[in-house]
Image (cartoon, rainbow, N blue to C red; front, side):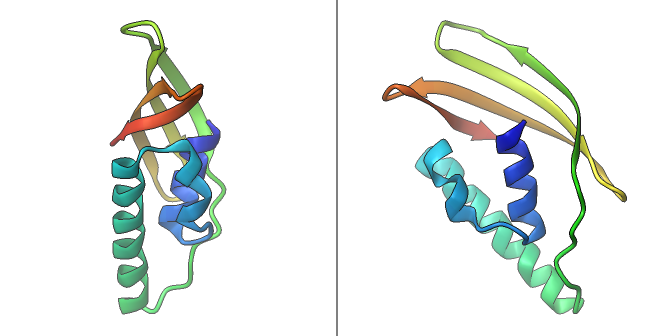
Length: 102
């Protein structure tokens, strides 16, 4: 729940991507930074401020295909939009890290 909420806040421009680096792999972190940059440029081109939407986590579905791996589907909604987020979380180096995010 918290990682997804953080990712959505980064995309909205109200949280720095660096705050998520410790919970993601390098590839996932780079993808988040790129997506956040694209969203910021789109807001800038439309002269929009960063929205302060509160994202409500509607549901979380977990599946563990093997020991030490979880795959999750999260439904989150704000005032104007509902999103489905899929992520894979693996136990790496003694801690959980997001290894895939879509």
